[in-house]
Image (cartoon, rainbow, N blue to C red; front, side):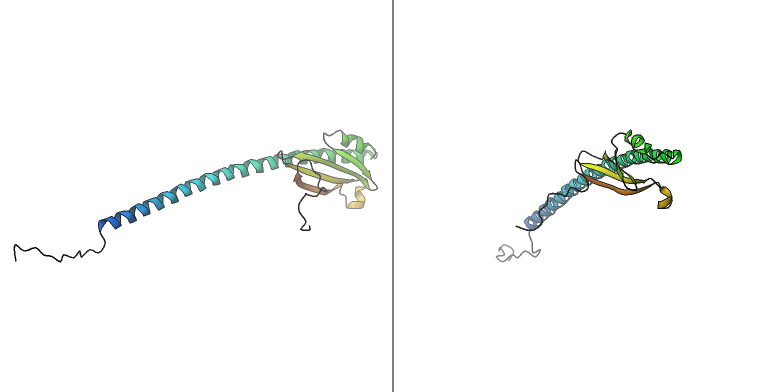
Length: 165
């Protein structure tokens, strides 16, 4: 028996080394793909963060400009109320850049717009009362303070499909 060959040899391990190598290559490819996708998502998150930061800064800058204009309009209303000549309010308020003044039965409507970005404007409108004592001592009431697409007023509807044919 020493010189005889054994004819029936069986591998006890089950899988050969070729299958293990293929599975390891597949796992490595999957992990590499996941790493590349994670890196791409991190880059997109950073880009979105930067856009949000610049958009918020632009909005707050426009908000500050609008509040400065409101402060000038309010000081003009105070001067007109103290002098007793409220008719001078329209002339004084109209001197502020970008301000439109129109007379109403109870006072004046003052409106202006501040650009936020090249696509968005901040539209503001206040009613300045000629008799603040009739309105709880308030010299003005804020009627509108909203963002709209650039070049449009708040009343201009957006051109969207209404669902009809």
